[in-house]
Length: 477
Image (cartoon, rainbow, N blue to C red; front, side):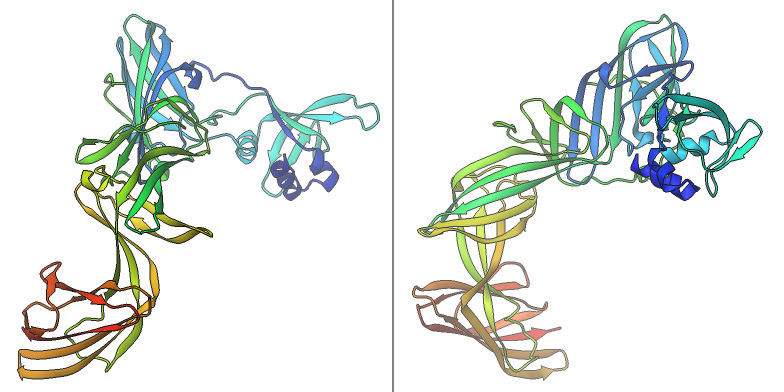
Protein backbone atom coordinates (compact mmCIF):
# COMPACT_ATOMS: atom_id res chain seq x y z
CA UNK A 1 0.00 0.00 0.00
CA UNK A 2 2.92 2.33 -0.61
CA UNK A 3 0.94 4.46 -3.06
CA UNK A 4 -1.83 5.01 -0.53
CA UNK A 5 0.69 5.79 2.21
CA UNK A 6 2.13 8.54 0.02
CA UNK A 7 -1.37 9.82 -0.65
CA UNK A 8 -2.03 9.85 3.09
CA UNK A 9 1.13 11.87 3.73
CA UNK A 10 0.08 14.44 1.14
CA UNK A 11 -3.33 14.48 2.80
CA UNK A 12 -1.82 15.50 6.15
CA UNK A 13 -1.27 12.25 8.03
CA UNK A 14 1.94 11.86 10.01
CA UNK A 15 4.65 9.45 8.87
CA UNK A 16 3.69 6.82 11.47
CA UNK A 17 0.01 7.21 10.65
CA UNK A 18 0.65 7.05 6.92
CA UNK A 19 2.55 3.82 7.36
CA UNK A 20 -0.48 2.11 8.90
CA UNK A 21 -3.17 3.78 6.80
CA UNK A 22 -4.53 1.22 4.34
CA UNK A 23 -7.69 0.65 2.37
CA UNK A 24 -9.77 -2.51 2.59
CA UNK A 25 -12.89 -3.24 0.58
CA UNK A 26 -15.90 -5.44 1.10
CA UNK A 27 -16.74 -6.37 -2.50
CA UNK A 28 -20.43 -6.36 -3.34
CA UNK A 29 -22.10 -7.22 -6.63
CA UNK A 30 -23.59 -4.32 -8.54
CA UNK A 31 -27.33 -4.49 -8.42
CA UNK A 32 -29.33 -5.81 -11.36
CA UNK A 33 -26.28 -6.90 -13.39
CA UNK A 34 -25.50 -10.35 -14.70
CA UNK A 35 -21.71 -10.67 -14.60
CA UNK A 36 -19.93 -12.78 -17.21
CA UNK A 37 -16.26 -13.10 -16.29
CA UNK A 38 -13.23 -14.70 -17.89
CA UNK A 39 -14.12 -18.01 -16.24
CA UNK A 40 -17.14 -18.18 -18.57
CA UNK A 41 -14.92 -18.27 -21.67
CA UNK A 42 -15.37 -21.38 -23.78
CA UNK A 43 -13.11 -20.35 -26.67
CA UNK A 44 -10.90 -17.38 -27.50
CA UNK A 45 -9.06 -16.62 -30.74
CA UNK A 46 -6.37 -13.96 -31.20
CA UNK A 47 -5.58 -12.50 -34.61
CA UNK A 48 -2.57 -10.25 -34.05
CA UNK A 49 -1.14 -7.67 -36.44
CA UNK A 50 2.30 -6.06 -36.61
CA UNK A 51 0.98 -2.63 -35.62
CA UNK A 52 -0.20 -2.87 -31.99
CA UNK A 53 -3.58 -4.18 -33.06
CA UNK A 54 -5.47 -7.45 -32.53
CA UNK A 55 -8.86 -8.90 -33.36
CA UNK A 56 -10.25 -10.91 -30.44
CA UNK A 57 -13.07 -13.41 -30.90
CA UNK A 58 -14.59 -15.06 -27.84
CA UNK A 59 -17.42 -17.44 -26.96
CA UNK A 60 -18.68 -17.21 -23.37
CA UNK A 61 -21.40 -19.22 -21.69
CA UNK A 62 -24.34 -17.47 -20.02
CA UNK A 63 -27.80 -18.12 -18.62
CA UNK A 64 -30.32 -15.38 -19.22
CA UNK A 65 -33.64 -14.75 -17.52
CA UNK A 66 -36.62 -14.00 -19.69
CA UNK A 67 -36.99 -10.36 -20.67
CA UNK A 68 -34.46 -7.56 -20.41
CA UNK A 69 -31.17 -8.04 -18.56
CA UNK A 70 -28.14 -5.84 -18.03
CA UNK A 71 -25.08 -8.00 -18.75
CA UNK A 72 -21.58 -7.00 -17.59
CA UNK A 73 -18.85 -8.73 -19.63
CA UNK A 74 -15.68 -8.49 -17.55
CA UNK A 75 -12.00 -9.19 -18.12
CA UNK A 76 -11.56 -7.12 -21.28
CA UNK A 77 -8.55 -5.03 -22.35
CA UNK A 78 -8.62 -1.44 -21.13
CA UNK A 79 -7.63 -0.23 -24.62
CA UNK A 80 -10.42 -2.08 -26.40
CA UNK A 81 -11.91 -0.02 -29.24
CA UNK A 82 -15.54 0.10 -28.08
CA UNK A 83 -17.03 1.08 -31.43
CA UNK A 84 -15.68 -2.18 -32.90
CA UNK A 85 -17.31 -4.47 -30.33
CA UNK A 86 -20.00 -6.85 -31.60
CA UNK A 87 -22.11 -9.01 -29.28
CA UNK A 88 -24.29 -11.74 -30.68
CA UNK A 89 -25.95 -15.04 -29.94
CA UNK A 90 -29.03 -17.16 -30.50
CA UNK A 91 -32.20 -16.43 -28.58
CA UNK A 92 -31.50 -12.82 -27.63
CA UNK A 93 -30.85 -9.42 -29.12
CA UNK A 94 -28.67 -6.55 -27.99
CA UNK A 95 -30.52 -3.29 -27.35
CA UNK A 96 -27.54 -1.15 -26.37
CA UNK A 97 -24.05 -1.43 -25.05
CA UNK A 98 -21.31 0.72 -23.53
CA UNK A 99 -17.71 0.23 -22.51
CA UNK A 100 -16.85 1.13 -18.92
CA UNK A 101 -13.15 1.47 -18.11
CA UNK A 102 -13.53 3.71 -15.05
CA UNK A 103 -11.48 1.40 -12.86
CA UNK A 104 -11.19 1.51 -9.11
CA UNK A 105 -8.06 3.07 -7.61
CA UNK A 106 -7.16 4.55 -4.24
CA UNK A 107 -7.63 8.10 -5.47
CA UNK A 108 -10.91 7.40 -7.28
CA UNK A 109 -12.21 5.50 -4.26
CA UNK A 110 -11.60 8.51 -2.05
CA UNK A 111 -13.05 10.94 -4.59
CA UNK A 112 -16.22 8.87 -4.99
CA UNK A 113 -16.65 8.55 -1.19
CA UNK A 114 -16.59 12.26 -0.34
CA UNK A 115 -19.79 13.06 1.56
CA UNK A 116 -20.38 9.40 2.46
CA UNK A 117 -19.84 7.32 5.57
CA UNK A 118 -16.72 5.19 5.97
CA UNK A 119 -15.33 3.24 8.88
CA UNK A 120 -12.09 3.97 10.70
CA UNK A 121 -10.48 0.88 12.24
CA UNK A 122 -7.97 1.49 15.01
CA UNK A 123 -5.58 -1.10 16.46
CA UNK A 124 -4.57 -0.90 20.13
CA UNK A 125 -0.77 -0.58 20.23
CA UNK A 126 -0.41 -3.00 23.17
CA UNK A 127 -3.22 -5.54 22.94
CA UNK A 128 -3.68 -5.48 19.17
CA UNK A 129 -7.43 -5.23 19.69
CA UNK A 130 -9.26 -3.54 16.82
CA UNK A 131 -12.08 -1.06 17.28
CA UNK A 132 -13.91 0.96 14.69
CA UNK A 133 -15.99 4.10 14.45
CA UNK A 134 -18.18 5.42 11.68
CA UNK A 135 -17.01 8.66 10.09
CA UNK A 136 -18.16 10.97 7.32
CA UNK A 137 -15.48 11.68 4.67
CA UNK A 138 -15.77 15.46 4.27
CA UNK A 139 -12.88 16.39 1.99
CA UNK A 140 -9.67 15.13 0.37
CA UNK A 141 -8.70 18.38 -1.37
CA UNK A 142 -5.69 19.28 0.78
CA UNK A 143 -5.74 16.32 3.11
CA UNK A 144 -8.25 13.78 4.35
CA UNK A 145 -10.86 15.42 6.58
CA UNK A 146 -13.26 13.24 8.60
CA UNK A 147 -16.26 14.03 10.75
CA UNK A 148 -16.52 11.61 13.70
CA UNK A 149 -19.59 12.40 15.74
CA UNK A 150 -19.37 16.11 16.51
CA UNK A 151 -15.63 16.26 15.90
CA UNK A 152 -13.70 17.17 12.77
CA UNK A 153 -10.44 15.22 12.55
CA UNK A 154 -7.59 15.40 10.05
CA UNK A 155 -5.02 13.07 11.56
CA UNK A 156 -6.61 9.74 12.37
CA UNK A 157 -4.39 6.69 12.81
CA UNK A 158 -5.91 3.52 11.48
CA UNK A 159 -7.43 2.07 8.35
CA UNK A 160 -10.24 3.50 6.28
CA UNK A 161 -12.75 0.81 5.35
CA UNK A 162 -15.28 1.19 2.55
CA UNK A 163 -18.24 -1.20 2.69
CA UNK A 164 -18.83 -1.26 -1.06
CA UNK A 165 -17.42 -0.11 -4.35
CA UNK A 166 -18.97 3.29 -5.09
CA UNK A 167 -21.31 3.44 -8.03
CA UNK A 168 -19.51 4.20 -11.29
CA UNK A 169 -16.28 2.40 -10.38
CA UNK A 170 -15.37 -1.09 -11.57
CA UNK A 171 -12.70 -3.64 -10.72
CA UNK A 172 -11.98 -4.46 -14.39
CA UNK A 173 -12.75 -2.98 -17.81
CA UNK A 174 -16.32 -4.03 -18.55
CA UNK A 175 -18.58 -4.10 -21.58
CA UNK A 176 -22.12 -3.49 -20.36
CA UNK A 177 -24.98 -4.53 -22.62
CA UNK A 178 -28.73 -4.46 -22.28
CA UNK A 179 -30.00 -7.74 -23.72
CA UNK A 180 -33.52 -8.89 -24.40
CA UNK A 181 -34.28 -12.62 -24.37
CA UNK A 182 -37.65 -13.96 -25.48
CA UNK A 183 -37.46 -17.25 -23.58
CA UNK A 184 -34.36 -17.09 -21.37
CA UNK A 185 -32.21 -20.09 -20.52
CA UNK A 186 -28.64 -21.29 -21.02
CA UNK A 187 -26.79 -20.26 -24.15
CA UNK A 188 -23.65 -18.78 -25.61
CA UNK A 189 -22.58 -15.20 -26.15
CA UNK A 190 -20.25 -14.42 -29.04
CA UNK A 191 -18.03 -11.36 -28.68
CA UNK A 192 -15.65 -9.81 -31.20
CA UNK A 193 -13.62 -6.59 -30.90
CA UNK A 194 -10.42 -4.83 -31.91
CA UNK A 195 -7.93 -3.78 -29.27
CA UNK A 196 -4.55 -2.21 -28.93
CA UNK A 197 -1.89 -3.66 -26.67
CA UNK A 198 -1.19 -6.84 -28.65
CA UNK A 199 1.49 -6.96 -31.33
CA UNK A 200 4.12 -9.24 -32.80
CA UNK A 201 7.40 -8.97 -34.63
CA UNK A 202 9.82 -11.41 -36.22
CA UNK A 203 13.46 -11.81 -35.18
CA UNK A 204 15.82 -13.79 -37.40
CA UNK A 205 19.13 -15.50 -36.71
CA UNK A 206 21.32 -16.32 -39.72
CA UNK A 207 24.44 -18.53 -39.49
CA UNK A 208 26.73 -17.88 -42.47
CA UNK A 209 28.99 -20.72 -43.54
CA UNK A 210 32.76 -20.38 -43.92
CA UNK A 211 32.55 -20.17 -47.72
CA UNK A 212 30.00 -17.33 -47.32
CA UNK A 213 27.66 -18.76 -49.95
CA UNK A 214 25.09 -20.51 -47.70
CA UNK A 215 23.37 -19.73 -44.42
CA UNK A 216 21.00 -21.36 -41.96
CA UNK A 217 18.04 -19.11 -41.22
CA UNK A 218 15.66 -19.35 -38.27
CA UNK A 219 12.95 -16.96 -37.11
CA UNK A 220 11.18 -16.46 -33.79
CA UNK A 221 7.98 -14.54 -33.27
CA UNK A 222 8.01 -12.12 -30.34
CA UNK A 223 4.43 -11.75 -29.10
CA UNK A 224 3.77 -8.84 -26.72
CA UNK A 225 0.69 -8.47 -24.56
CA UNK A 226 0.23 -5.19 -22.69
CA UNK A 227 -3.58 -5.24 -22.64
CA UNK A 228 -3.86 -6.04 -18.94
CA UNK A 229 -5.94 -9.13 -19.85
CA UNK A 230 -4.65 -12.68 -19.92
CA UNK A 231 -5.64 -15.23 -22.54
CA UNK A 232 -5.59 -18.94 -21.75
CA UNK A 233 -5.86 -21.78 -24.25
CA UNK A 234 -6.20 -19.34 -27.16
CA UNK A 235 -5.84 -20.03 -30.85
CA UNK A 236 -3.35 -17.65 -32.44
CA UNK A 237 -3.07 -16.16 -35.92
CA UNK A 238 -0.36 -13.71 -36.96
CA UNK A 239 -0.98 -11.35 -39.87
CA UNK A 240 2.04 -9.96 -41.74
CA UNK A 241 1.61 -6.49 -43.21
CA UNK A 242 -0.03 -3.23 -42.27
CA UNK A 243 -3.77 -2.53 -42.38
CA UNK A 244 -5.23 0.94 -42.81
CA UNK A 245 -7.05 2.27 -39.76
CA UNK A 246 -9.47 5.17 -39.44
CA UNK A 247 -10.45 4.18 -35.90
CA UNK A 248 -10.03 6.76 -33.11
CA UNK A 249 -7.41 6.03 -30.50
CA UNK A 250 -8.66 3.89 -27.59
CA UNK A 251 -8.46 6.72 -25.05
CA UNK A 252 -10.59 8.94 -27.31
CA UNK A 253 -13.14 6.23 -27.94
CA UNK A 254 -14.56 5.36 -24.51
CA UNK A 255 -18.15 6.19 -25.42
CA UNK A 256 -21.59 4.59 -25.45
CA UNK A 257 -22.50 2.77 -28.64
CA UNK A 258 -25.13 0.66 -30.33
CA UNK A 259 -24.51 -2.46 -32.39
CA UNK A 260 -26.52 -5.13 -34.20
CA UNK A 261 -26.29 -8.59 -32.69
CA UNK A 262 -24.80 -11.25 -34.98
CA UNK A 263 -23.36 -14.67 -34.26
CA UNK A 264 -19.68 -14.92 -35.14
CA UNK A 265 -17.43 -17.83 -35.96
CA UNK A 266 -15.70 -18.57 -33.50
CA UNK A 267 6.67 -23.14 -27.63
CA UNK A 268 7.27 -26.42 -30.33
CA UNK A 269 7.13 -26.75 -34.25
CA UNK A 270 4.80 -23.96 -33.94
CA UNK A 271 3.65 -22.08 -37.01
CA UNK A 272 1.92 -23.59 -40.02
CA UNK A 273 2.88 -22.65 -43.58
CA UNK A 274 1.58 -19.13 -44.21
CA UNK A 275 -1.66 -18.76 -46.10
CA UNK A 276 -2.57 -15.82 -48.30
CA UNK A 277 -5.71 -14.04 -47.08
CA UNK A 278 -6.95 -10.58 -48.01
CA UNK A 279 -3.68 -9.72 -49.79
CA UNK A 280 -1.74 -10.50 -46.62
CA UNK A 281 -0.02 -13.55 -45.24
CA UNK A 282 -1.42 -15.27 -42.15
CA UNK A 283 0.56 -17.63 -39.91
CA UNK A 284 -1.47 -20.03 -37.75
CA UNK A 285 -0.05 -21.46 -34.55
CA UNK A 286 -0.68 -25.19 -34.57
CA UNK A 287 -1.29 -25.41 -30.82
CA UNK A 288 -3.14 -23.35 -28.23
CA UNK A 289 -1.19 -20.57 -26.53
CA UNK A 290 -1.43 -18.93 -23.12
CA UNK A 291 -0.13 -15.40 -22.67
CA UNK A 292 -0.25 -13.41 -19.47
CA UNK A 293 -1.59 -9.92 -18.97
CA UNK A 294 1.81 -8.23 -19.37
CA UNK A 295 3.86 -11.02 -20.89
CA UNK A 296 6.28 -11.15 -23.80
CA UNK A 297 6.53 -14.61 -25.35
CA UNK A 298 8.66 -16.05 -28.17
CA UNK A 299 7.39 -18.72 -30.55
CA UNK A 300 9.25 -20.54 -33.33
CA UNK A 301 8.15 -19.27 -36.75
CA UNK A 302 10.31 -20.97 -39.40
CA UNK A 303 13.71 -22.49 -40.11
CA UNK A 304 15.61 -23.22 -43.32
CA UNK A 305 19.08 -24.72 -43.74
CA UNK A 306 21.56 -24.24 -46.56
CA UNK A 307 19.91 -21.14 -48.04
CA UNK A 308 21.91 -19.84 -51.02
CA UNK A 309 23.27 -16.33 -50.46
CA UNK A 310 25.40 -13.94 -52.46
CA UNK A 311 27.83 -11.70 -50.61
CA UNK A 312 28.56 -8.45 -52.40
CA UNK A 313 30.61 -5.30 -51.88
CA UNK A 314 28.81 -2.17 -53.04
CA UNK A 315 29.42 1.55 -53.32
CA UNK A 316 26.38 3.84 -53.43
CA UNK A 317 26.49 7.50 -54.43
CA UNK A 318 30.02 7.63 -55.84
CA UNK A 319 28.85 7.58 -59.44
CA UNK A 320 26.92 10.71 -60.42
CA UNK A 321 26.62 13.10 -63.34
CA UNK A 322 27.08 16.31 -61.36
CA UNK A 323 30.55 17.79 -61.18
CA UNK A 324 30.70 18.75 -57.54
CA UNK A 325 33.77 18.18 -55.34
CA UNK A 326 37.03 17.49 -57.14
CA UNK A 327 37.44 14.17 -55.35
CA UNK A 328 35.30 11.96 -53.09
CA UNK A 329 36.84 9.38 -50.80
CA UNK A 330 38.31 7.18 -49.85
CA UNK A 331 35.09 5.47 -48.75
CA UNK A 332 34.59 1.87 -47.66
CA UNK A 333 32.39 -0.60 -49.49
CA UNK A 334 29.13 -1.68 -47.91
CA UNK A 335 28.87 -5.42 -47.21
CA UNK A 336 25.55 -6.84 -48.35
CA UNK A 337 24.01 -10.30 -48.45
CA UNK A 338 21.54 -10.97 -51.25
CA UNK A 339 18.95 -13.73 -50.80
CA UNK A 340 16.60 -14.84 -53.55
CA UNK A 341 13.42 -15.96 -51.77
CA UNK A 342 12.66 -19.06 -53.86
CA UNK A 343 12.49 -22.82 -53.48
CA UNK A 344 15.63 -23.21 -55.60
CA UNK A 345 17.63 -21.23 -53.03
CA UNK A 346 16.23 -23.16 -50.05
CA UNK A 347 13.45 -20.77 -49.01
CA UNK A 348 10.27 -20.10 -50.98
CA UNK A 349 8.23 -18.79 -48.02
CA UNK A 350 6.83 -15.32 -47.38
CA UNK A 351 9.17 -13.65 -44.89
CA UNK A 352 7.59 -11.17 -42.47
CA UNK A 353 9.47 -8.00 -41.66
CA UNK A 354 11.95 -8.16 -38.80
CA UNK A 355 15.55 -7.78 -37.69
CA UNK A 356 18.05 -10.30 -39.12
CA UNK A 357 21.20 -10.86 -37.06
CA UNK A 358 24.01 -12.58 -38.94
CA UNK A 359 26.72 -14.72 -37.29
CA UNK A 360 29.58 -16.78 -38.64
CA UNK A 361 31.40 -19.66 -36.98
CA UNK A 362 35.19 -19.67 -37.24
CA UNK A 363 37.92 -21.92 -35.87
CA UNK A 364 38.39 -19.53 -32.94
CA UNK A 365 34.71 -18.99 -32.16
CA UNK A 366 31.59 -17.29 -33.41
CA UNK A 367 31.55 -13.78 -34.89
CA UNK A 368 28.66 -11.34 -35.05
CA UNK A 369 28.79 -9.88 -38.57
CA UNK A 370 25.99 -7.34 -38.28
CA UNK A 371 22.24 -6.89 -38.48
CA UNK A 372 19.72 -5.24 -40.75
CA UNK A 373 15.98 -4.82 -41.06
CA UNK A 374 14.28 -7.21 -43.45
CA UNK A 375 11.19 -5.81 -45.18
CA UNK A 376 8.18 -8.03 -45.87
CA UNK A 377 9.56 -10.25 -48.63
CA UNK A 378 7.10 -12.32 -50.70
CA UNK A 379 8.15 -15.54 -52.40
CA UNK A 380 10.10 -14.82 -55.57
CA UNK A 381 11.47 -11.46 -54.37
CA UNK A 382 15.04 -10.60 -53.42
CA UNK A 383 16.08 -9.54 -49.93
CA UNK A 384 19.18 -7.45 -49.27
CA UNK A 385 20.86 -7.20 -45.88
CA UNK A 386 23.49 -4.54 -45.25
CA UNK A 387 25.87 -5.75 -42.55
CA UNK A 388 28.38 -2.90 -42.32
CA UNK A 389 31.47 -1.76 -44.19
CA UNK A 390 34.46 -3.63 -45.57
CA UNK A 391 37.66 -2.39 -43.96
CA UNK A 392 39.98 -3.32 -46.83
CA UNK A 393 37.89 -2.42 -49.91
CA UNK A 394 37.84 1.32 -50.65
CA UNK A 395 37.17 3.67 -53.55
CA UNK A 396 37.86 7.22 -54.70
CA UNK A 397 35.90 9.17 -57.30
CA UNK A 398 36.61 12.39 -59.20
CA UNK A 399 35.10 14.22 -62.16
CA UNK A 400 37.67 14.71 -64.89
CA UNK A 401 35.42 16.86 -67.09
CA UNK A 402 32.08 18.67 -67.02
CA UNK A 403 31.36 20.34 -70.38
CA UNK A 404 28.37 22.56 -71.19
CA UNK A 405 27.10 21.65 -74.68
CA UNK A 406 24.03 23.92 -74.72
CA UNK A 407 21.67 25.58 -72.27
CA UNK A 408 19.86 22.28 -71.70
CA UNK A 409 22.66 19.78 -72.33
CA UNK A 410 25.95 18.96 -70.66
CA UNK A 411 28.46 16.11 -70.64
CA UNK A 412 30.12 14.70 -67.53
CA UNK A 413 33.14 12.42 -67.27
CA UNK A 414 34.08 10.62 -64.07
CA UNK A 415 36.85 8.34 -62.87
CA UNK A 416 36.33 5.86 -60.01
CA UNK A 417 39.25 3.85 -58.60
CA UNK A 418 38.44 0.79 -56.45
CA UNK A 419 41.24 -0.70 -54.30
CA UNK A 420 41.30 -4.17 -52.75
CA UNK A 421 43.68 -4.87 -49.85
CA UNK A 422 42.39 -8.42 -49.38
CA UNK A 423 44.50 -11.43 -50.36
CA UNK A 424 41.80 -12.61 -52.77
CA UNK A 425 40.06 -11.08 -55.78
CA UNK A 426 36.57 -9.62 -55.23
CA UNK A 427 33.64 -8.42 -57.31
CA UNK A 428 32.56 -4.90 -56.43
CA UNK A 429 29.37 -3.08 -57.44
CA UNK A 430 29.47 0.66 -58.12
CA UNK A 431 25.95 2.09 -58.27
CA UNK A 432 24.69 5.55 -59.11
CA UNK A 433 21.43 7.38 -59.70
CA UNK A 434 21.34 9.62 -62.76
CA UNK A 435 18.86 12.29 -63.90
CA UNK A 436 16.34 11.68 -66.64
CA UNK A 437 17.58 12.33 -70.17
CA UNK A 438 20.94 10.60 -69.71
CA UNK A 439 22.87 8.88 -72.50
CA UNK A 440 26.05 6.86 -72.04
CA UNK A 441 28.74 7.98 -74.48
CA UNK A 442 31.59 5.71 -73.40
CA UNK A 443 32.59 3.48 -70.49
CA UNK A 444 35.46 1.16 -69.65
CA UNK A 445 33.08 -1.47 -68.19
CA UNK A 446 29.54 -2.18 -69.31
CA UNK A 447 26.80 -1.06 -66.93
CA UNK A 448 23.53 -2.74 -65.97
CA UNK A 449 20.28 -0.84 -65.46
CA UNK A 450 18.69 -1.71 -62.11
CA UNK A 451 15.94 0.87 -62.79
CA UNK A 452 15.44 3.50 -65.49
CA UNK A 453 17.85 5.87 -63.75
CA UNK A 454 19.76 3.56 -61.40
CA UNK A 455 22.89 2.09 -63.02
CA UNK A 456 25.41 -0.35 -61.62
CA UNK A 457 28.88 -1.46 -62.75
CA UNK A 458 30.25 -4.81 -61.57
CA UNK A 459 34.01 -4.62 -61.38
CA UNK A 460 36.52 -7.42 -60.82
CA UNK A 461 39.22 -6.16 -58.47
CA UNK A 462 42.38 -8.31 -58.09
CA UNK A 463 43.90 -9.24 -54.75
CA UNK A 464 46.09 -6.44 -53.43
CA UNK A 465 45.31 -4.38 -56.54
CA UNK A 466 42.88 -1.86 -58.00
CA UNK A 467 40.46 -1.41 -60.89
CA UNK A 468 39.57 1.91 -62.53
CA UNK A 469 36.18 2.74 -64.04
CA UNK A 470 35.79 5.74 -66.33
CA UNK A 471 32.66 6.78 -68.17
CA UNK A 472 31.34 9.81 -70.06
CA UNK A 473 27.62 10.67 -70.03
CA UNK A 474 25.48 13.25 -71.77
CA UNK A 475 22.48 14.68 -69.92
CA UNK A 476 19.72 16.62 -71.71
CA UNK A 477 16.79 18.24 -69.92
